[in-house]
Image 1 (cartoon, rainbow, N blue to C red):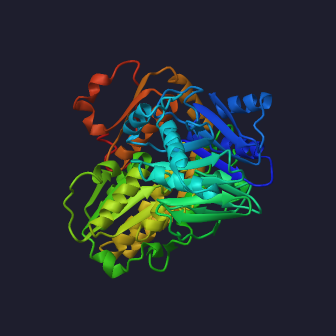
Image 2: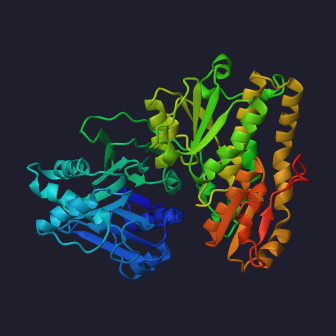
Image 3: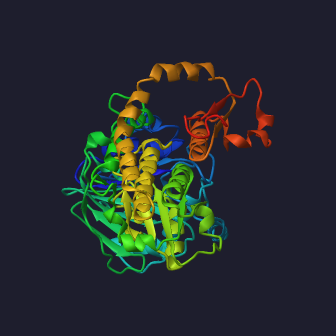
Length: 536
């Protein structure tokens, strides 16, 4: 969840880094730090708390220079404090490193370096990686920038786990090394300046040209040029893409926070997911990105949907719709579980992986496991340049625009909308009549305005929220397709309020869940006027 930004160019790096980092604060906010090269050494400033705390620090103690790196942290190894904040330095104090991911073998590496006389000032795995780079740098026989690049490559070859990194050395001004494995990293290409970030939204005010780095890519930045190689120091292929987003797309605008803005963007999100994908003539959906003919789709006798968190709940809604409309057995599974269990799969199985970012590590691992077993794996994601978009055999883009809020909102309704299109397409290929298909198309066209109507009930919602604001536990109950909606409601309650919440099928209330019911535990029933209304 952490955020990385790096810059090298002609301008003062400090304001650029702090501004870009502020656009990534949603990725982590227990501490932040910045390191810059000023021509005579490294200047490092770190502070626990939100990025504004760091901004106040550098106002008093500036960190000027034309090359720098910065980081906003959500703690994994080590508690949130100034010492554990990134950037971290090596033993010599000449190398500064920011890092997203987890070094799984950090303790073994740390023990080896402690035995060699190294001392550490934090309890993070990142500082261990910084020391490892420094150790290889000291042992290298190369000179200049090549020496630093080789040291980074050698250290990463010893690392087990995931990383997205940016590193600088005080003896090599205007030079940044970045690399990724399992943690996203984007190169921003400017005019006589280059950028790195863990999310392209941080780069929108500065450049529209980006390169989405691949796993095991290593990139070097200088103000007027960049170079990308593999971890084995071979030339790597890449493509410069133009971002089709304005800087305003990643701004809060009139809203107090991104989550509220994105809730109000849901009608447009649904319209974008539907645009150009509904055929009145065929009473069906058109999804050419699947890269499968109707004949191939008819041969499918099982669908597996793999995802994590909110995306998995959207997949569970999709399971109900596809089974109901297309009569194809569907299974949903946690991507993290699928990749490590031996699931028996029929050769006519189609796998979908769902991820807003297209970079969710467990989902990407599940995609690769499915392909390793010889299956076609399709992706549903929002980021056109993401790893899942590149590695899947086809899929559907959400076109939801940037989702900055950590608690997914508009991406969930976009994913559910796309699953309704898939259910329509698969249903029409099989047993669904044209009239039934047209009824569903008409209903989908009405959906954005129906959501707009709901968003007009803000005051009613506020009244309910105030009534239950002191509750410490809540239950969400729904049946069939509304059960995963209940799960998603409970997840949102946990993520946003930090209180206990559970989602269950309504009929399960009597099977143990009722023990949780008391006067201080409200229950939210998702209860539309459907065939199970009276039962519910």
